[in-house]
Length: 495
Ligand SMILES: [Ca+2]
Image (tube, rainbow, N blue to C red; front, top):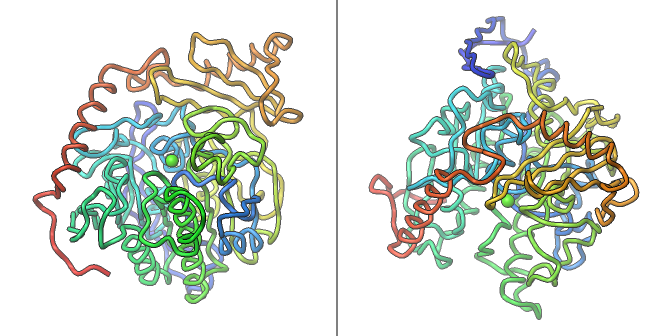
């Protein structure tokens, strides 16, 4: 038996809310703990795509440490994001819910800072980890609610947070301030607009490594939401790309990807130095597929669509939904495996539950399936379907995958498209006319998987959502112009 001290955990499902009290049992030695409670690190690199990494075929951008991670672990070809933009994708991971059930299904901007918060009753992977006596931390970009809301990371099971709370704030890599837990601190010399002395990722990486060193001797669950290589593609050092015959933006993009790579190398090196690599699962992933049209400045140079998939970020085709994704757990996840079975972000919560021995609140239903046997080299779990929705523009869009069939609907008044991923991964041949049976099946999935939520109507974006976003962006632009910092921001030594 391992120690199961308990904290009371808020849990809820539907309209019910109950409190779960666990048992307190005797502590065990470190060796037994190692076997029963592996550490879990989920790294989400914002907008990184399969085609950015050498191990997926990229030739121009150097990613030696991620390529090594793939060689020492497993590389996935059909790993699906929560949905194809930031906030809902990370919320899907955090809640174990697909975007038909998740409380966050789009980037819902709120003034003055932050996004639509996770509701208080949400069950999160961090709360589940806390209940199993894990230390928990999140670094980088949060995007699931400002500190004065129910989405405060500290109210959702996260012991320690460091980085940007708000996605709009995270557009700057030289911000005028960051947060250490909920305390803002000043980054002197930065203008928030692309010029500065202190690169935010440097501070975030350093805080992450420091926390790891302080918590490596206890079970921990870390969510490392790296902002790179998301736009605006600002970098403190162009490194090996400085003299390339590329545009400045192309050089900065490549340098951002390589920075993610070297920071991941430091993370893996630190785990080995602490002698906990063999007790730690890392899943590394993008939060949406490629962000670039093949005809764009970045797309033309780096050809992220080399995997032959259609579409990119903010869409519902495979190029938007399939991630660069690697799993690394020396001695447990097979080395050098490349696998094309599908799985999705909402599987990671039940996966963690099985790994940690945690118990989900009675009656709480995740949409995911545990991947533990799959991670260890077995087959991916069977399931009826995967489902995505995205509330980005005026018209929410939906997709489903059932078996090797894929359904896409670009709005509830649009026809359902059907593709056979087995023979047509590029989704170029719509079979809807000849396969009305599959259209009906897709319609039934869309009806079943979408839970009605007033924040996320399917016919069009809500007026409240539009108004809040407009106000939020006005404030963001005004703050950028004035190099704003919060009144409560402190000056501190930076390292
Ligand atoms: Ca993203």
